[in-house]
Length: 205
Image (cartoon, rainbow, N blue to C red):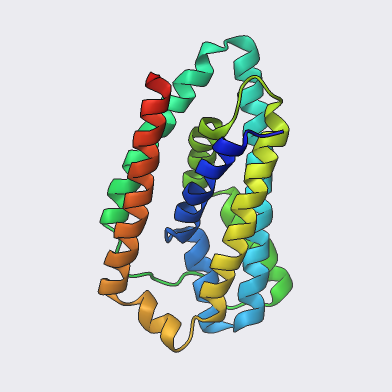
């Protein structure tokens, strides 16, 4: 269903994406700080579901493009390489995390988390530009994209959920620490850069 080597390359990329602070993580942090761990976990579950929706939509859209013009697949892949480098530069400028969102119950936190993820243009762009790099166009794209969507959603659920659960105490101090932000930014930037270089060399060959 999906090339094992491409999947192996996708795993650190997915980890780097999930570790990079964004609207999703900020929302879970806000719920953890203001409403406690249960709403934070519910919000993280909604965000994870959003990842699956994005993956399915991207697979259907990319499949249509490839059917119409197969060379567009390579164009999308090169756009993804450039986007990885853009993410690396953004990670180097990463600052302390700032919580977002008002406190709410678990059910509403789940719905709001889903909406936050589905309406986040950065997530939409990332999925469209990123997932095709790890897919084999000779195979059915939808199953491949859904596997990657599950990995993104599963990893994001635990990472965003952990941020929300541990939002008090040490978690709050780490979120507000410029030193922690710089260290996390360097790790993510290194992963994104290594992946971009690898994919560029792979395409060139």
